[in-house]
Image (cartoon, rainbow, N blue to C red; front, side):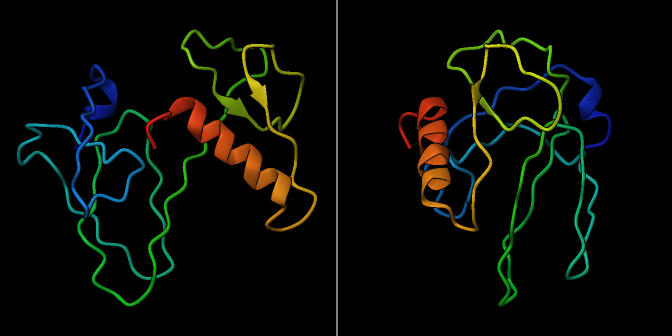
Length: 127
């Protein structure tokens, strides 16, 4: 939705919609028709501000759809929310407000997968 990244964050409500692939099925009510369609060709990505209201229709192709969230911040930034998020340190020394995840030793590293599962459980205990 154009300009939504500059507005106040809207409430995200959990749903039980089996077609919503988000961890908690989050959705924003009453967005209206303010959206702008952006159809991506295979292999393309979209990048957007964390506050931008965005969505996608069902994947009608035979290929899988992948979503990933990456948030960068300075190492001195302190988290004021609870529970504590986990972080992967890219540079610097993080403040103690975060649970630090260690770099995986190999692809599909078992300890990294366990660490990730614990991080998700901490933030989304009902998942």
